[in-house]
Image 1 (tube, rainbow over the protein chains, first blue to last red):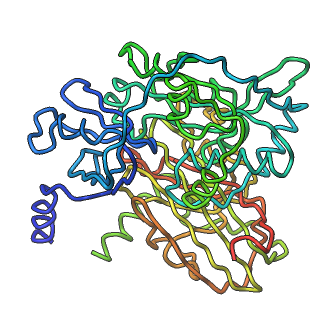
Image 2: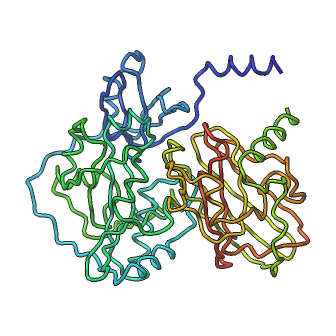
Image 3: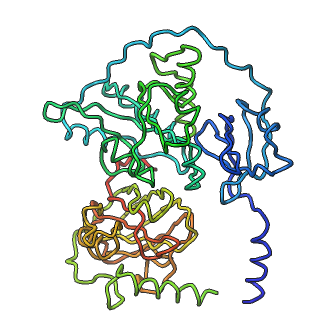
Amino acid sequence: MKKIIALGLIFGTLPTIAEVVRSPIHSLEKVNNNYLVKFENGRVAFLSANHKSLGLSNLNGLKGRMVEAKLARDYSLLSIQSLEAPLKALERAEMVEPPLYEATIVSSFNEAKKIFKRLNPNYKRASECTNRAHIWASEEFKKNNLKSMKIFVLFTASYIDRVRFKWWFHVAPMLTVNEGGKIERRVLDYMFAHRPLTVREWTNQLVFSKRPCLPTTKFSEYDVNPQTEDCYLMDAPMYDWTPTDLRNQEIQGKYKTEFSQGEIRAAYSEAF
Amino acid sequence: MKKIIPGLCLLILTSCGGKEKDGAVANDIPQEMRSEGIFKAILRPYNFTAAGWIPNGMADIKINENQIEIKSWMDDSSNVVHMQNIHVGTQCPSMDQDINHDGFVDMNESIKVAGKILMALDDDLNSQEIGSVYPKGNYSYFQTASLTNMRNLEGKVIIVTGTASNPALPIACGVIERMPDIANN
């Protein structure tokens, strides 16, 4: 038995690959003595600022590109490599007014519960929240003509570093519900909740500090990342898929007014 | 090592109140009509702050006459033994069951709504004897069994326990729901 433990300890000192993330890099941030690598699919990886072979300049060169990153069990970055050529930087466009989006008003909370219960339960293990939310929203639209919202919770680098959180954002479909004459927002986080939740109930589940998240309509307000907040909230039409859509609206004035079938196919392929 | 794991499980089981105090699975439940079909339980988290992460999982159950097949998985950051049991209740616990207001819904509080253990989803579904091995860490579980007294599992709940600091604390729960036959084949 002693030999087994000793062997375990020896192996335990070596960084073992716990997970491989394949996704474009969304952004890099320095927090305390770490760099935080944010991937487009929502995952994060930590890199010590003292790490020589995986330095900031190397990682900056990979921003926006599809990469394959190997992560240890504590989400520290072990290695990273590009899977494609560099992308062109986004050009800032003139500001345009967002198109009007009117979500369906669900008649009651009981109706919202019915919608929640009929969401597609056959998602894959370790699927991404963006893809699950996109399919749940698109299936409800296709089958029942229900126009839902999306709600994104965006965690700040300081919060992620503090609780060593695995994700930098989470997204779920959201309904606008008539509850006794008052319009309420109810989040349909089918994977993590037993019923439609209020936004505050939802963030209380996700944010361990229980601090309320600051609502914003501009992605840049989150992206500049004041370290004083734990999280931000952004509402979006059901057509928006990832935080890149939120960023593109602001930078490029690109707003989605329908589901992209390519995105739907990609979401099914990854998540269901 | 095999001897150690059941021993550890026995220690956990007897200290958590998950199974009955006399160490047996609840046996005073009236036998219900057997129910064939395909079922699914989404294992959703509770006791979030204790877990430090957001555990989640799924259980798929197929019942055909006396044959039962159970597949489940759980993703969790704690590399600890996770007891998973089907309970006789039909409701997952919530923070409303935190009777002592310590911020956690422990097993004793959970069974107020989830009820006694009906079936232990361990490595020996056939025996249902205490001391069998439960899965550990991020797990994938698969077991089949032939049971003479198959009960109707529809509407019952599955509770999964185990955090790094408290192996008996529940981390996830799901209600077993009947699926259309076309799904999950």
